[in-house]
Amino acid sequence: MKDNTEQSHQWNMADTITSLRMVSSVILLHFPVRSIGFLAIYSFMGMTDVLDGWIARKTGTASEFGARLDSIADLLFYSVLMLRIFPYLWQILPKTIWWLVMVIVLIRLTAYGVAAVKYHRFAALHTWLNKLTGADNRERILLSVGSLSKYADLQWNHGGEGIWITQQPK
Image (cartoon, rainbow, N blue to C red; front, side, top):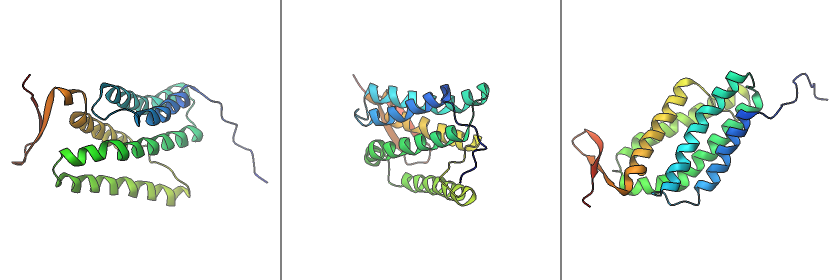
């Protein structure tokens, strides 16, 4: 018999925000990658990823359920990225950059593995460093796919200076 020492979870604003990210992930599948709709939903999802935990902590409603829901929302979001954005980026970015992407993916998978061993279940480590790398990755993806893609060209400088935006002729 299970010991019910933990209170039952009360649905809260942070859970609603996390759920909106999950719904947005599914909606994102139906928009072309270089569309304003895709960019708007993608940006909204980034904001919900930051806000849900902050609101939960500020309102005292942080819970194990909320942390699990957030991990599921993150996993769903990453799956959508792999389906929608990575094929597009594969076409426009130089192949050498994919070694760096592979390292980032391996680090993330290792973090999931460490959490699984430590906690004996699926969990994402919600550290500030993890949040910062997620924000940095979103910013880079937005630069390469996002708002300027209709009006600018993404170019790669093989001299080592990186990626920059240039205006397309009208």
